[in-house]
Length: 384
Ligand SMILES: Cc1cc2nc3c(=O)[nH]c(=O)nc-3n(C[C@H](O)[C@H](O)[C@H](O)COP(=O)(O)OP(=O)(O)OC[C@H]3O[C@@H](n4cnc5c(N)ncnc54)[C@H](O)[C@@H]3O)c2cc1C
Image (cartoon, rainbow, N blue to C red; front, side, top):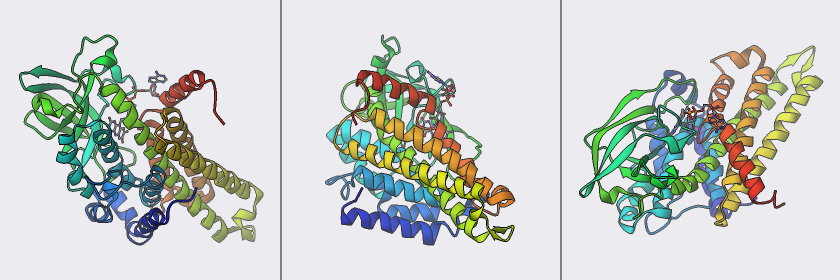
């Protein structure tokens, strides 16, 4: 699909940033597991943290197709950079869609510049898929909520000064989702980061365990003005999150495909470029076809998001297909590169370590299949 000229220019700016500033340094940052301070600084200057924040709170929001293409470009350079703006966008959308006017004015202008970073905290040590079984509780005490519980795997937690916390304000509610709310939590006394979690990929960006022990926030921290709406609010937010993860996967797949296509023309065996061996040519053909299909699915889901319709099925399909495709393409890129595919002096092994995150994060692919099947039945099939 074609973007408006000014949106195409934004994507082009990010593409140039990735080629000139990210790709030359990514291997070093990755292997040193270094937080990319300078690159994040440039992302703030480009306006990447404000892409979903319209005027008067920000500089103007872009369309969802433009947003996913920016995320895809970043991930093509380094998935960690796209990860650093993912949760932040979900939180900005949550505040925009459901926040009070005071919350919008308090947070969105600083979030748009990236001066204030935000993350979302859903997953708990006891489980991430079964959110309604969460144990983090915020009890009302006068004009405050008092929070107790813990969250795990929270991306960007050290660098984020605002956390959209999914918790129970009524732990006895039946059904359980009616007792779930979102609190906009700053780093108040009683909040602590207990651990940085070691991980296979997604290097440079932290994922942490968070603890809340009698952490007190004012009642005004409740997203919107009603308790018990948090589950539905977060499901809408996750549509954005899942499109973003699908875009990240597509970016990783593109990088792996591009590298494999180039390598297959440079590397020779038996007196010819390896792509001319049918087995390798077929692999490239399949990789390219799957990538094109993944990207088309992603863009069509993003386009539908902007129509204002419910897109949990479409976002789920994009997330499922793009992430499984990224995994396959990353593996095939290892095959095409032979021994070099296994070398830490090349980028291929990084794609292979980054791709699985998109299968798990933002709701596992098994959970996506559940969402998709339910919607297929409810909607009476695909409207194509
Ligand atoms: C690097 C990283 C960053 C992350 N960042 C964040 C973040 O910023 N914020 C956040 O809140 N979370 C974050 N997560 C957590 C992530 O969203 C969860 O790991 C994910 O939702 C799965 O939850 P779980 O790990 O508890 O697995 P579980 O829920 O324990 O699932 C284990 C397995 O059982 C399967 N399963 C469970 N229930 C069902 C079911 N009903 N049907 C079919 N299969 C099922 C799952 O698919 C999976 O295969 C991050 C994770 C990682 C690895």
